[in-house]
Image (cartoon, rainbow, N blue to C red; front, side, top):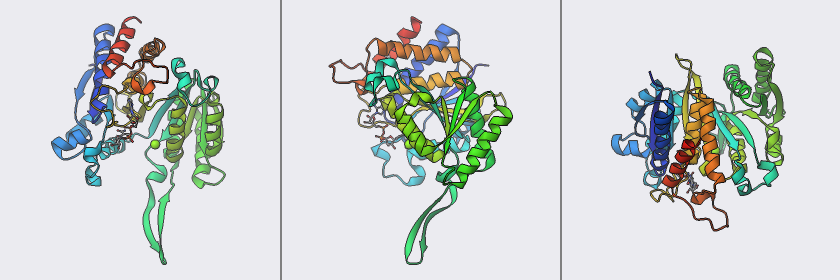
Length: 366
Ligand code: NAI
Ligand code: MG
């Protein structure tokens, strides 16, 4: 049977950028004989409007069954005053939690045509291609005890950084597997100098390496030094593996080395299913962009590159993923820019659909 894909466009620009991805999916069906069983459903505010919940149980069940979920974005001002339990982002959090998506892959890739767009010098970022693997389901955002407690005559806010050996082990394996398909190097980041969880992190990553991935080059770095090195000379890295908190910060910083939020894809992977494919959710890094929603201005590339990641990591179609990335690179080299990619040079921006159509045309020419 065909590989299955659940599409959750969500809110704001989510449906606009997803419509362009659907064109790409259709192209693969028509021109490359790669048919997907695609189903579509609601998430976030759109699901709340219809069902009173940001993720219906039936949608959750479907997400557990398919080979990959592709999500647009959730949220918007209309939902800002909703109760916490039904806020749009709860739909996304539920997907991540129940699918147990522990490895968050955030590539920072700089297309040559956009190198001058970076806040860093061209030679520092041109050709940059690194991958940050952030642990996503544990650590300080989840550890107990947590809360605001009263201690004596004042309050104290508490979060707990907590990692088990198995949690570190599985995300380390994800990073080593990835490295083997890329530049074969992993840099693990923690703060073993001041954190017990960091000491354990370093030890377990090293142990997994020595036992099962001795062919991959492994280094360790303190996360604060890592942040400096990312800004100084990011091309020294291939895969970076780090915990939830440091990964949150480092991946956002690395993302900005390469330019616009409208360009950044992500994947969140879990354990393998019965068919050997990992549980997987692909989504652009950006949100629902209410300031430009409905105006045809959104850059669809982040969502399109998220589908490229799905081709590579869920469907074993690495060559086709590269084909799609090259098509994106081609339209950028041709000078096409959505409004978010404009500098001061007076280029007229293209719309969301024009960008999508141009990428399809570049695929046709590939
Ligand atoms: P945002 O990412 O939606 O927008 C930030 C800025 O970047 C805006 O100026 C927006 O116009 C621009 N932008 C974002 N994506 C773009 C694209 N594809 N093309 C062109 N420009 C783009 O973040 P913001 O404004 O903080 O949040 C807006 C809403 O999105 C909120 O409700 C927030 O909760 C939600 N959100 C959802 C996320 C998700 O679904 N994963 C992630 C982040 C925010
Ligand atoms: Mg963040």
